[in-house]
Image (cartoon, rainbow, N blue to C red):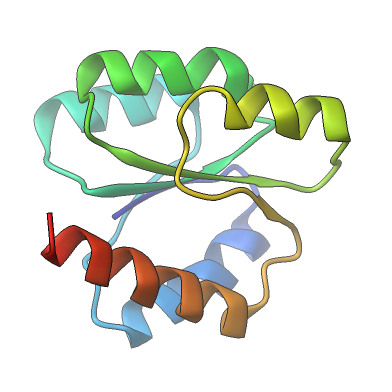
Length: 120
């Protein structure tokens, strides 16, 4: 799993939950770094901060899917609007989360996604 997040506090909270569930984890703090990692390594799922310093999610999601079309993407937004969520959902994401991300919700979501990936 690749977490693309610029905020260290959010990263730590998400990391604890992901590692607790036994998922392998890698980090990127920018869209460019994420694209570089995705071209070099295999990831099934990406947790993506919607507002990165170098890319918006609406620009980055198509780039990530161009690199790996079957990647599952879960955007996380601190500042949300219906228009933004609608635009991002049209890009073929797995799920849309708002921050702060609850560890219970993240566990439930990752368990659901893991089961789905196993049955592919």
